[in-house]
Amino acid sequence: GENVEQHPSTLSVQEGDSAVIKCTYSDSASNYFPWYKQELGKRPQLIIDIRSNVGEKKDQRIAVTLNKTAKHFSLHITETQPEDSAVYFCAASRTGNTGKLIFGQGTTLQVKP
Amino acid sequence: IAGITQAPTSQILAAGRRMTLRCTQDMRHNAMYWYRQDLGLGLRLIHYSNTAGTTGKGEVPDGYSVSRANTDDFPLTLASAVPSQTSVYFCASGTGNTGELFFGEGSRLTVL
Image (cartoon, rainbow over all chains, first blue to last red):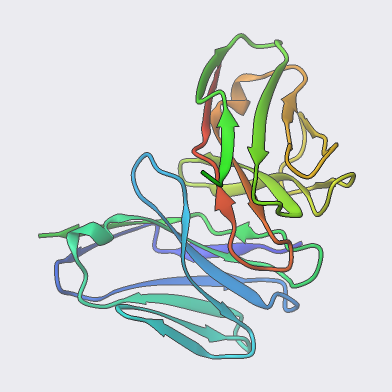
């Protein structure tokens, strides 16, 4: 089955700096890679996703890159703000009826004002 | 308000007791999932259901069972709770064809 590894487990940056979180996956058939943000005490929520037919996707200050050959993908947050502080999870799955997502271990991002 | 509802929000349970966590969605999503969240281990898939009447095992299914009698409900049962099942449990639903998952608020379960 799929296995997703996420690094680092914790990340501390100064406000305004960039943050990068990296994930690797094991199943070469995986083709959907979302990122979820979980604020303290809240439920995880989707912030961005990428499918295997593209190498990069941006949404304002957030971008995700995908390298299918190396089986890794990354989340990039630019101009970080205190409200970006949260736990971020990457995930991977295949398309089709077995759309079960396998998550990474999570990264706790702290943005210091 | 459309969404996904879990109950109970929090529960303390004696080891050996039976417990059912309830999950209901009104978005008519075909797929539903149960995850457990533990510090340092992320979200681990327990069981899933692609459509009413079918279920499947996830990464950590032992000690848990599920049923999917209809589209809206997906209860998770611990037949005989053990302390290692102390966790926060999240139910989620989605279209099943890879897309956004919508999570419930979570159920915090403590097994003593």
